[in-house]
Length: 418
Ligand code: HEM
Image 1 (cartoon, rainbow, N blue to C red):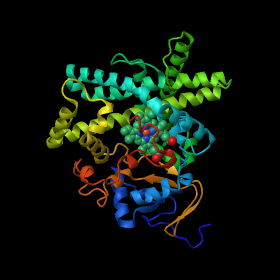
Image 2: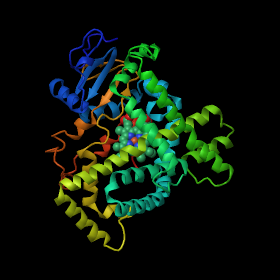
Image 3: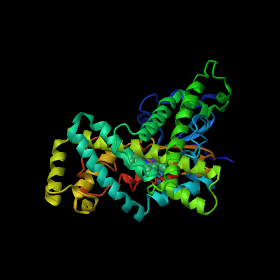
Image 4: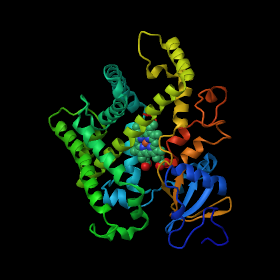
């Protein structure tokens, strides 16, 4: 019961719409940050009937999403993504339950342990070589070379599939599913998450057009679930499968006599999530790095000098050099902070009601972390719009890795690989 506790402050709420009519249309993170300036770093709104909090500061994110992680690590019901686009068993969409814990453990074991990360180094080293060759031969294609770089690493670690050309079948399937999801997942179609009855509108009715589009997305997502998985199974039969996330799970569950249809679907969903979550994000960071270097030639020069001094010009820098490259490390942190790859992270959901600072936060509240606002907090990062790696040399303000990968029990399990 709410009792005498008020909701946190926030924009005006109308009876049916809540605060939807006031939602920023573009650059939502900036609009939400303005709400933060007006109402405080914890803002309360209603999206139709859904109670929502927007967290605009690291302090509140840490207090709620980290320290009270047990209550703040579920996900909202995502009708569009799961029921209409078919992203079942995608870790990003599963509420905090036993299935979540199991799949999360699979992914953490495969992507966060020391042994796993060491095994991946060889793949990463080889793909750096491929990337550099590609840039030398077709410099204008650098953006797609970067996407290929991150997609290849994810493809090989997840499915054991080594990408050999620019027209790789499985990368094509992954890209089509990811692009279609992003395109069809516009704010308009997301309405169905807040107004579940829209699911019942026939496709031919006004307002029902999104259903035809959703059916097309679902086909592409299904292809991403099935095609690479079947490829792994075929290769396992002929003894040509390389060790990967998918093959080790198939082996393990088969050994335990548990490889049922349901578990196979769980492996497929987990693997597809890794592809969806790991490719675009990593490529975005590398794009940001190039932009930052073009705009800050002084930083670029200093960075090159450090690498030349420590590594020399006979070989490429390697992961083992990282500790001896303090300025490079600062450039990486500043790249993460300057243009955060996911400005609003992924939405969380509360499980039970809570009180913070005297304010009431109901159960089943949608929680939106404004990671962009946190990356621009003046009292943590002075002159935040500037790209200035030195800020991490003289002092040690909050490591951006604590915010850009999300929070609590949902924090990105690919952070170490990234
Ligand atoms: C720089 C690159 C990356 C960034 C910035 C990033 C960022 C994020 C963020 C913000 C979340 C949401 C966390 C939350 O809900 O609080 C997330 C979730 C996730 N990421 Fe990453 N990520 C990156 C790379 C990767 C890679 C390489 C993988 C592959 C192993 C990966 C796999 C996942 C998965 C499976 C989830 C869902 C976790 C869950 O719902 O429990 N990510 N990531």
